[in-house]
Amino acid sequence: MKNPTDEIIQIVDRQNRITGEYPRSFMRAQRLIHRACFILVFNTRCELFVQKRTMTKDLYPGHWDIAAGGVVLAGESYEASARRELAEELGITGVSLAYRFDAYYEDPDNRVWGRIFTCTHDGPFSLQAEEIDFGRFMTVPEALELSCREPFTPDGIAILKKIQPEI
Image 1 (cartoon, one colour):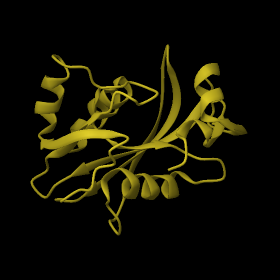
Image 2: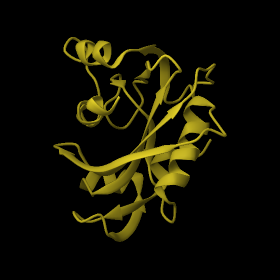
Image 3: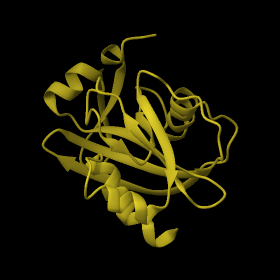
């Protein structure tokens, strides 16, 4: 497996215009604005697949995450990134992705333009051991309630709060 810190990432400005490309390690060290895809996976009962990130993740290790996804590589579209990440992280291929919205998120560790998608899949999943310890389906209100007691990715919670009225 390729070392994720060596991946070349698409860098953008605050208006989401491409400005360059750098290795992930440099992007994280410099807090450069980058693109990422977020795919919320629902089952046919409208429950959300929530995953526990490994402790080796470079951002928000050990946190719960409401989405599959990741950084957009240099020369890659959001949609291609979403399909790649779904296949890598959950073993999902051949599903229809529904575009929801684009959103900018910033905190002391992360500055990202995210494209949010949803899809439907009941499993089973093939979890990527390097990225995900385990996961389970829960309702959106259950996920939001759990986020009050356990650490969740803050960008994911912002997305979940924005998308909740649509679900």
